[in-house]
Image (cartoon, rainbow, N blue to C red):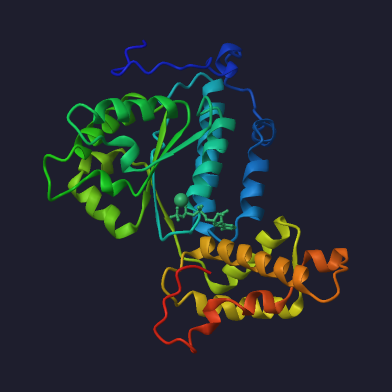
Length: 326
Ligand SMILES: Nc1ncnc2c1ncn2[C@@H]1O[C@H](COP(=O)(O)OP(=O)(O)OP(=O)(O)O)[C@@H](O)[C@H]1O
Ligand SMILES: [Mg+2]
């Protein structure tokens, strides 16, 4: 039935997995889970998740579990066991830069490969994309976003701003109502991920028990340790085809040790900013040096001064100075 309360219809064909309608297996048949994993490309996604994302062990474990569940469900289906698809709405809590958006993107891809999501794309929004400013604006805005996200993941950053406890006429609650209905009625065609700080999310759930009850997975993204941040920096520089000299590596370590305790620290995002700034300084150093000739090694090496010039090291000289970025 296209009895969708809001008339959201797939604008892309259903996955062909269903069309091929493989014959039901007899009870004594045996299926090969490893082959099924390979076919769906699950191992590849999980392996990339593991090598390309530093740390996040609990997050990786949960994703592997979800992948296993969907795979087992699929195999059971082949024996004719029809069970409703599991709800996969999730909540990602953690501080800025802990990898929530990145993991949501990978999750969308994985769920697509597993045949759970038709499209596997991600639509990332905040309150402003969902809630209007005047009477009658909110419903069309929210429905439009949902329509775009159908078949994929709807990622709502800082979801708790949808609800304003102090204002019961706020249009946010209208948006929440619509989301709640869609999360129920279209749970097999849309995965909603709510993201944000843990404490604010708790308050939000306390005030919106309907939302809480629709979330199947609560995943916590811990802050990275300095070791992990260092590893992330190395991954990022590698990815950009730079290397850190031994002295630069030491400078990086000192940089991170200081940076984590300073204002506006945002985990991996701060690392990315620091790497970008080091690139800028390296470029300027090369362009301004007396001898204008450079080789590949010079072009691809970050040296200690490229990091040590950061404001992070000037804190002592300027007590009370606020570091806003790298
Ligand atoms: N574990 C990790 N390993 C490698 N890179 C990472 C990791 N986590 C995050 N990054 C990188 O750090 C940057 C910030 O990550 P991301 O945007 O996913 O964080 P976030 O939790 O969504 O942050 P925000 O709350 O600021 O939106 C991205 O460039 C991402 O690629
Ligand atoms: Mg994000």
